[in-house]
Amino acid sequence: MAHPAPAATARPLVSLRQVGKRFANGTLALQDMTLDIGEHDFISLLGPSGCGKSTALRLMAGLARSSGGTMHWSGAEQTPSGRELGFVFQEPTLMPWAKVFDNVRLPLKLAGMRRDAAAPVVRQALEMVGLSRFADVYPRELSGGMKMRVSIARALVTRPRLLLMDEPFAALDEMTRIKLNNDLLAIWREHRFSVVFVTHSVYESVYLSNRIVVMAARPGRVIDELHIDEPYPRGADWRSAARYHAHCTAVSQSLHGALHGLGIDH
Ligand SMILES: Nc1ncnc2c1ncn2[C@@H]1O[C@H](COP(=O)(O)OP(=O)(O)OP(=O)(O)O)[C@@H](O)[C@H]1O
Image (cartoon, rainbow, N blue to C red; front, top):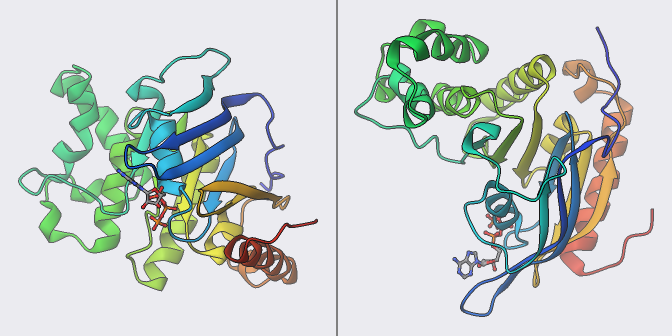
């Protein structure tokens, strides 16, 4: 059944206010980022190399400490526990010596869950990404797309409320990327977590997101936000729709502004 794009900023899950990051060498990687991540938002961070996308994601994940601003998680200022967020990197970062099952089980193991209790949870996560039959194989036996699916299953095995993804499909071929885009959207619609997705691709961001945050470099900062108020599910029809291409044009123009330091006026 079709449902509309989530209303932007409805009941924010995480609120960032003027969050910044300056590294010890003086680089201002992120300046005054203000963003509300709503329940069941799918937000893309889009911008040229060095505009602070990864830094923003790492700050949200608590993997780096901000040098200014505040971050509130569901109304309370606190670091989210590992169970409330999942992180997917560009590389699948799997343990080569462990089978798929044990790679996906890792966050539960770290949380102290016994293997027998974890087993059905791991199986569910593998089912979500279509890898039920591959629990007992090693990562080296899998294609790049399948390895990324394992990485997504591992991030989702704790049922996080927020999934952070740093260019997860950038290294994949076009067909695999399209398939993973579709499968990610299906999982997101069914399980209703929020996503912050870093990408360089205008097309991918418009395909997936209900909100696109455009960023510029030197210093890294947000310069624009575009809303893609189009219904889900989105599939092949959406990719060939005139409205999809109109959104891509608008986002490209905004990104052009990011590259050339222009102000954007929507
Ligand atoms: N540990 C660090 N120490 C110093 N500077 C850093 C560090 N990490 C990142 N930077 C700098 O901060 C800026 C933002 O980097 P970041 O990786 O967040 O950008 P990005 O938009 O994710 O880039 P890309 O698309 O190339 O991955 C860049 O100028 C980068 O060189």
